[in-house]
Image (cartoon, rainbow, N blue to C red):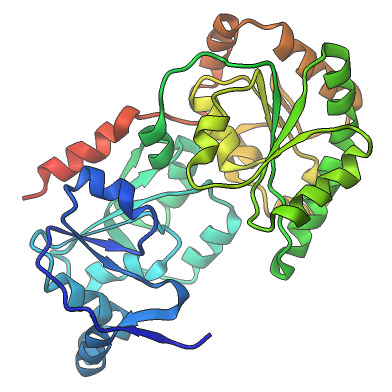
Length: 355
């Protein structure tokens, strides 16, 4: 992919957003007073590149590229949902007065920790973490004030709603990237075993099954599931921006393998079922989130990692027979699984404290 240059002149703004990921959400909290450093699609600011090439000797090329944008940022604060970018944790080594707020935007796996292990002196001012489980792991490698908030987007899009229809919603994690062959094999192994039980449950309880898509390759993803469902007719919802948060509020039961969205549904009070059989192979389980690895043991009230049809049927039937009020009471025992911070109150307090 060729490098594309942006020749736009910057205006003075209060905050600097690293990567334009969910910029429209940030602007609602930051009064649209934001400049953006885009690192996606190899698009770079021409003037920032020149600045970095001239001053890279002071730190690193990427740090000075970011530093150019800080010249146009009044509050000298960088905010990012792209928590995987290690360069963000290196800035304070060279410019300790810069405020850096990192927000975790997806459940973590061992891949992120392996990246951190190869680096030293990583730091930021605030790391807004999704869960207590992940906080206890990540804080060993990054110096920061860790605050557990759950999901930033989930907190923003939450609206208290009643279940609107009897539907089983399966959250897809379909992928077709060559770089994650092992994950694809693991996911196939789980869905191939699970779906016949979902179909039987659907027929017994007369509840339809819907698939919430995860890929932009709509036709390929839809056909992928048709191979499992055979003659059973399911509804397929295409992936759309922020569309998922409306969808997970509707169904009677939300079923997933290990996606961030299944845990977000849990924090919204939805009845969830998690089925994941990656433990049959170590090279599969490395893709599992820390929540699945460390918080959820082999099996429990609403999940199983054992390839056992009786347990799958037991979980689904139990959820079906449990009222929403009973579910909320039982859910309380697992409250540390995934947090919720309505309208990101903790984030707003941090922003209000910055002069």
